[in-house]
Amino acid sequence: MPDVIGIRAATAADGEAIDAVIRAAFAGTEFGHQGEAGLVRMLEGDGDALVSLVAERDGAIIGHVLFSRMDVEADGARLSAAGLAPVSVVPALQGQGIGDALIRAGLDALRERGCAISFVLGHDAYYPRFGYAPDLAARFASPFAGPHFMAMMLDSDAPWPLGGRADYAPAFGRMG
Ligand SMILES: CC(C)(COP(=O)(O)OP(=O)(O)OC[C@H]1O[C@@H](n2cnc3c(N)ncnc32)[C@H](O)[C@@H]1OP(=O)(O)O)[C@@H](O)C(=O)NCCC(=O)NCCS
Image (cartoon, rainbow, N blue to C red; front, side, top):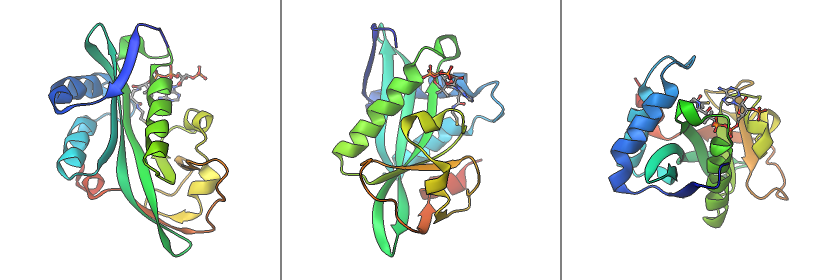
């Protein structure tokens, strides 16, 4: 990541700049819709945003990542869990490690909060480098089960649960 770029926690004042980054990042992707900016607003409104970070260059926000609260049960007990979505970098600056730095900083912030597990639904060529594994997610019943559904224990020494269920925050069910 270029050294002139800083990463910090998002504040309420960043809302419009974050919307703009998300819209720019997702315009032209295979996802083909613009629902992610609304999703971030809904998660924040519901109090389900756990970690929201921005990448900044010269005072301008050029990247964002959100981790939101999930409802996860593992081996019969609740497990504190966070879903990674969405992550966005403005198109002109993609491929320079900014998304990587945002995700790693977010995972560290989750560890500091004592969060046990994180899930992501995304590209299987990208997320395994952070520790996400489809084999762990496959142990959890979820509407998103499949090769793109991945999970990681935030303490890499923690044993993998044998099984359970994983549900994203309610806002995901309200996405347009
Ligand atoms: C995904 C995204 C946040 C990554 O941020 P970034 O700063 O561009 O990524 P980094 O520079 O940290 O990493 C680049 C790597 O990610 C890979 N990558 C980026 N987007 C990818 C995608 N959509 N599918 C597969 N791999 C992707 C690149 O191929 C590159 O891989 P390499 O290191 O093996 O060459 C950014 O590309 C983006 O905003 N994309 C559009 C929105 C999006 O698709 N978000 C994720 C939804 S699952």
